[in-house]
Image (spheres, rainbow, N blue to C red):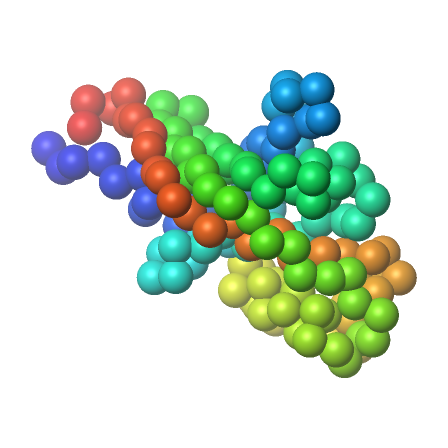
Length: 143
């Protein structure tokens, strides 16, 4: 029997639920495509400027991300403070470069980087960086 490693589950998951804090103190939950950099203890998520999770993170920079195993029998949560990068106005600017790096790490190569960069500007995409301060989870598989 091996010990459960919630960080390994975070690193292997490409679907999660991001929780930010609404103005009334209640959580706001959004499905997201996270990328966890275990060495840097950072979770990266592409979000859109003006949406609830982005506005919440600007007002209160605390968040949590939860992921589950494909069979639903294990889960992991990362909590911490967030930084927002962007939105960028220049497709070749540093804000969009950060989104390109996120995409490469989370999904691989894009078939048309010029189009991707243009869409990141027109959609007002922002890179949310969660500085992981606490990780916890559980496996119901007996480990």
